[in-house]
Length: 178
Image (cartoon, rainbow, N blue to C red; front, side, top):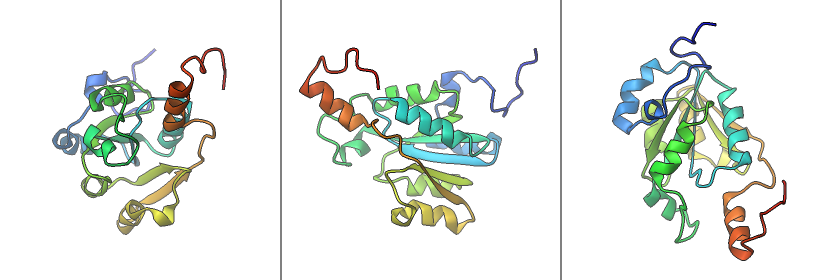
């Protein structure tokens, strides 16, 4: 059995190798196989909806870059004063541990527009709770010939709903398969 070569979708990278500051990401970009898929989000408490979404996003290209909102950025999204539950660093490490994810970075603004402009991905992907026509990011990516794809929403999986259920009835999740 041969080991995968650099850039192969099956390539195994250490978690630390996938975590990138913006500066490190810009240096690493030329080595990420194209087409490059970009997605962003909070990804606070990883669940089935997230991993299904990320696997589907990766299938659209040769590599997947995930940009997570910084803790400060999350607080500005109106998800609640106690969010995120997991720190920015913890969320990034969990993302980087996924085989479907090629690289992870973060952004501190309300949206990833500046990062998108630097990265210039081939595809920008969001979940079914968004509409292309409502996303300024989609128009930006399309301006250089990139595509925007909305993936189907995986019903029944939401971090916000999960947090509400746990807080309302702490034992509510035991033994209840989805």
